[in-house]
Length: 264
Length: 259
Image (cartoon, rainbow over all chains, first blue to last red; front, side):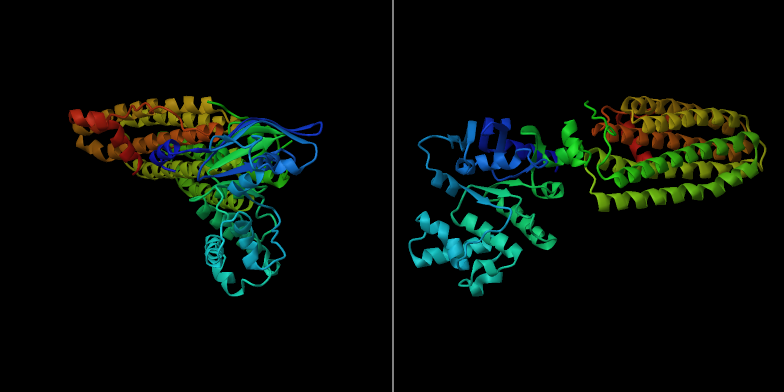
């Protein structure tokens, strides 16, 4: 990136999600320790680190998916556009409409393609008329790059699509409710390289309208898709920086050990 | 400047380490060969030994081959290992260092070619100053290669600083050669050849400093800060240096480096 462009982008950066001293305990286990991390708007932030390092745990804090895990306790402060998302009065369902999620394994509902996309808008009361729903379904599928492949079979089950198409269907489903942040937990680990490339291209397009946080085991993927990269190890956020900096000249020995394949 | 120990741990995939060692070893071997080529070329000059000069010319192909093999190893490592951080820097540095060493080899070969001609015409006194200058260039190459082995950024920087001495020697040789040529037109042919020899050595010094910069980058991940001290004023030896070109002297040196 040119130096001037870099400066401009730094000045234009808005913090979308602000985390301070975030701790997560699973019963006695202290899984995430004192994490301070800012996620910037309209950027892709990737979370990397070895298995069990806390990156998925952190991701799940951002839309309170940890609430459903027994014995899980979250402390600290996480603010979305300045509002504490762990506030007692906050409606978790509303939060998850603002912070959508895509999982490792594509998980379409056992319903038609149309209903897969229309499900979210319906429960959030977004499309009351058939016309509105039609439009939401079409635009969501278009934004997910799937419309041309499926427009003639919207009444067919979502489970009949290929793995890569299913994952794009899940992304279309996530954006149908017009979220602000999209969380992705290893969205490509079950996909072949072509399907992966399509998702990565999609991620790059989506960041114009959304803020994206992606957990990935593929460092190459983190290097390809994200603007910023955070490295977690043993529940600690070791280092966060511009992706290019992390992969050419990391400042922490642990980061370097991990990304160069020398860990241990 | 924060330096992370580069080779503190071995890779989980051991063949990756072996390939990195191979490329490291090749760069060093290539550097050693170029250093010897320069020494032999200058030796041929002081002994007026065309045979030795011929051997230098013939040996250059081996340096070129080694560069080719380093390029292939580097491309293969980039394609198959997707190196990151210090590994990535090591491979990029090896690629670029190899091309600088290859140029040093070419200059040594060029010196040897001039020696072939010089041995056929009567000697001129400045021929004795050239080996002195070449010695210094050789010392810098050696220091730079030592810095590469030790992965020592400070050592690389110290070697880098010494190039100014080569430049200064070049300027004084230039003046000396000019004087001889003005005094005796018959000295023009040998002196011109010697001038090119000296210029080649000066360029070798520049490539050695490039290598020092690459080592610094490989070790620290940062670019070496600050301008390099320049001692080459030969561009302004006959005419007076105009004011604005004094300011641009640095740029003219850069242009020359691009030749």
